Image (cartoon, rainbow, N blue to C red; front, side):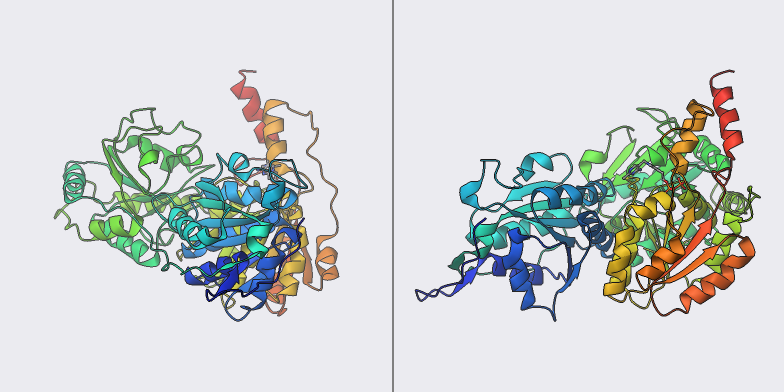
Length: 571
Ligand SMILES: Cc1ncc(C[n+]2csc(CCOP(=O)(O)OP(=O)(O)O)c2C)c(N)n1
């Protein structure tokens, strides 16, 4: 562990440090905040950030997973890379979950890791890992900067790589002596520019021809890379052509869910009527999302590799096209570029599918109506009350767990980037994502919905919310078990409960111990008053909702799930 050396000025060339070059590059590329857990490996960067507190906010977290998830959330919210700064070995391994989520969700993000000094590398020095091997499959690009002169070049490449084509995470390893040693100043490089493809005129002509010949077309939109303007263009296109629109798993905010063309979310627990509509379509326009497991109902919704439906698949990255499903018209394009071209398409006077969008929206409205579940808290109604109480631009976050299905089904997203949720299904995401969102948009309401399991994977970040005075509302749906896994367990191994039970703290008291506001809700009618008190608390707040284990999902109790399992096995 070498110590930071003070810069020395011994020639006419201005002197600086590698750390200063890193911070200069962050400034050049428009970074306004970094999320970190400090480590001795990057003291020099912290020292350079000390000089820039009016331009870059350093948000100190309690766990590197949270820091990385916060950076990922910034990437999701803004389309610009969120930046996390962590120490080597233990810090990098903790942070890896955020990198995985950024990869699966195609989110621009940069993880900076303080590395062992160059002279100690390859000895398995203290906390040493070769990040190029560790993050090889998880990141779009991983590099180690061994020469301080090349820091501006590497950072520029990192920002371009994270944002271009299919966006994703970049990991840069920074040996501590590269950061701390004095070096000659290097001319910076200009701010990065996002590089995206556009659809060709011939492709858009072909798409129009396919639409004009269709009887039952359907749009599935989503994925990363949208902007408010691109969403407005998408809306224009689907209105002009009267198209029903499903939204891909956890990209439910790409079109206002109240829009009369909105048909529902194409994700886990899909509305069977919507799944049937997709199966019955003769033309599918898949605009943006990966055709991944969650968006295809576990690869069962469509035939592999050639769908029965004529398939137009548009994605930001060429490598995603033809990965599982062979499209009749594959198009590589950025979403703003695609949506502008689609919005400009003049519609046919009277489409063959008149009324289809309205039918699909009616089916969605029917689906989102709460059905009674066991116990005194009707979660469907709670979510609808939450929706009624929050303004359209409120940001809702979640991680993984059955509790999220109430949100997916009963909440309606009305504003682009009002949903922050990992398509990677990572627990522990919603709490840090909400904190990051609130740090970006202090005036927007931010609500993190979490299961008791999911919340406890990031509960320590309540301290971060308090430290930075971020008034996030945390809602913990407490059913005292890892409910999702119990559900699968009951389906496959009925009445053999093992490894899924949880003993929990009193969550409201736990929140109060951090100085946050705490509430406990045990009946539906207690939720709204608790919500009002929490929103008026002028500080971070937590509402614990106590739920019976039997109320497994909006559609099935544990007993019904055991029964489904028996039927599946032909018992
Ligand atoms: C980091 C991580 N670990 C484990 C899992 C597997 N997993 C998926 S959902 C789940 C249970 C979530 O429990 P909870 O947050 O209490 O929500 P519930 O399902 O009970 O509503 C688990 C363990 C995961 N998705 N992510």
